[in-house]
Every structure is written in structure tokens, then in C-alpha cells.
Amino acid sequence: MTMKRSTAGRSAVDSPGATESRGRTPTGCHLGVLAGPFFDGELPPGEARSFARHLRRCPACRAELRAMHRLSLLLRHEGHPGNWGEEPEEVTAVEPAEVPTARPSPTPSARPSLARGPALGVVGGCME
Image (cartoon, rainbow, N blue to C red):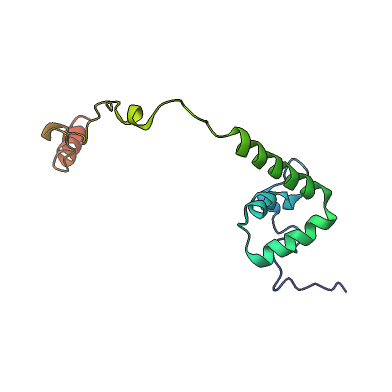
């Protein structure tokens, strides 16, 4: 006789295979997909605690989290365009390209008409 363990009250992190549908990360653990949301603080508190426990025993997820941290540092230091060298007055003085504010409505002949449908059906039926 096989005993089933209850999964009530367990998060996706605690449930083996619960996130299998999300796929595996390049590091190999199916829970590695939670590294980004964990790093960004987007996981619910219970799931964040469970994932933190998982990190203690999973080198693949720790590597994924380190990669997130390195990427964040890189974007923080290299991701900003820096000083463009223009004063605010110069930027606002540029004339915007002329953009139409609204599209013209179709001409009456281009509008679909329900009245034409039956007429075409009758004509089409006569052509057989």
C-alpha cells in the first residue's frame, strides 16, 4: 500500500514537479524560473521563504540567482545612456514631426454593407 503525502498548504517551491510546466532553466532545476521573481521581490512571502530554503540545497538555483545579481549590476552601471551633452532647452526646441491626429473615416463606398451580402448571394446563386 502506497501512502500519499498531502500537498495542502504547500507552495510551488515545496511541491516536486509543481512548476514542471514552466520548464527548466539552463542550469537544470525546474525551480530556477523563480530566481528572477525572487530576486525582484515579486514572490509572495511564503513562496519567497520556501525558495530561500530551496536555495540552501540547490547549487543550480544559487547559480541562477548569482547570474541575476551580475546582470543587475551590469545594467545598473552600463545600462544608462549617460549625459547626451544637450541642454534641456535644446531638446525641447526641436520641432516634432507632423503626425496626423486622427485617421479619416472610410468613404461610404468602402464601408461594408449588410445589404450587399444578400444581393451577392442571389447573384452568385444565379450564376451556377
